[in-house]
Length: 287
Ligand SMILES: [Zn+2]
Image (tube, rainbow, N blue to C red; front, side, top):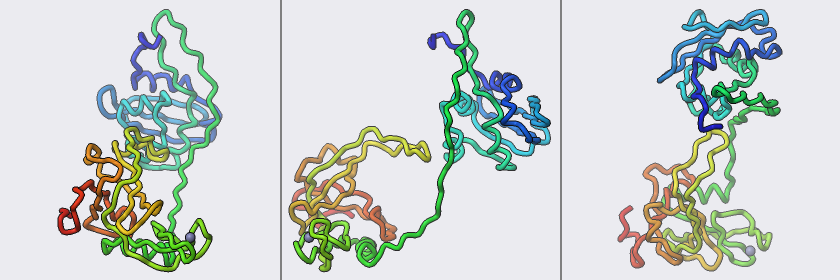
């Protein structure tokens, strides 16, 4: 059935709006909504909502708020293949004018159902799932504290500091205040690395999209446990390995950090670790 589906057009979406009005959704709303649909199959429309009625006309006329979006994204939005908030936060949907009015718009119409080819019964409209759409954005400041703060500050100076447990002597990386094994305070600082050896690693070829932005990070990327020089056993440091070096990776491979030019006291001050030759040292590695 989907093989012979009629292509969905922006025209048809606007053309069926008046028939798809959701009376509860437009109750009490009096405003003119403009749409600038860009690209092939696009155009401009005004959707006037007033006194429980909707009138759709071509062109933009005295609109209170305007949405700008590509024809393909607009169609995806109406087919439920693109989330409105995702489109907005990623800049694919732009809104000019009264944003509060725009937030009411998703309730104006019943779901758009694409036209069925001749001889095929139109798909029965399905009941909408009850969903809550919201984005939580809370500005926050975290104090890193004396231990993590010192560890992060050292990264600015291209130094990796571990802290030793006062009871078992285990080196903690990143530095923490308490040893998880002994529940004893960690007290003695010791500089380790920055070179080390790969112990375990994962290569990710398919990244799940970020639920908030819909963006996926670039792949492949490598998450690795690195036994830094001066560390033993399980005292590994988690970081990433340069994906260009995947062919050279093997357990025990020598690695060396690549530092960002601008360092701000964050774990990402180390861009990643490069796989280097066995005898490379600080002097031997191009930084
Ligand atoms: Zn311990």
